[in-house]
Length: 200
Image (cartoon, rainbow, N blue to C red; front, side, top):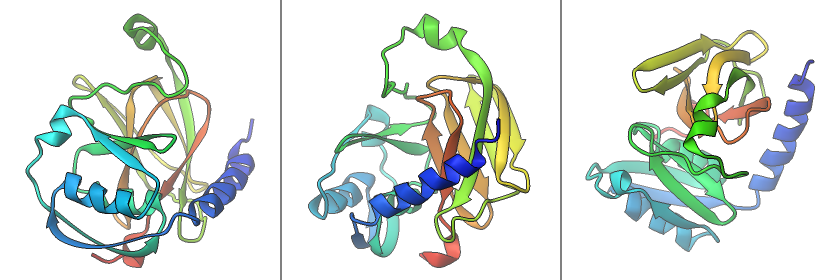
């Protein structure tokens, strides 16, 4: 089944919807908590953090003007091991190395999560021009096991052995790294933000 045309349509609708929440930031040497506090003041979002994120003492810089939340978070978390999980207007920031994803759509036991392993399909697309991104490295790291593949010319990928609650990392030299928790094993799209459009 070719799901890419459907995903592209969904991406266009998603990007259009996000354009209503415009955020401007110019922060230097700010903590994650300070940066997200500034985002919250400009939006309807509230942020919560895992203990690993709370204990992070690193300082980050970010400069964006009238950008949607997806782009702001991609830039802010690019050089970290953190990822974000939106649930309505609540956004959780978690650490890939230590935190377990609280599944968004269903409650499963650890036995159910660990027993469900599948071939996971996706499509990687640019937020800039909606173009499909080839050559992106797609990775899942789980307790010493690394599953990896590269997107094809159509931006598509198939990653074998993915489980619910895994975190998928997508890297490309021209784009900010994206980390996305797996809350559904159906085919999905992933948006990457181009670096040269948001020079820091």
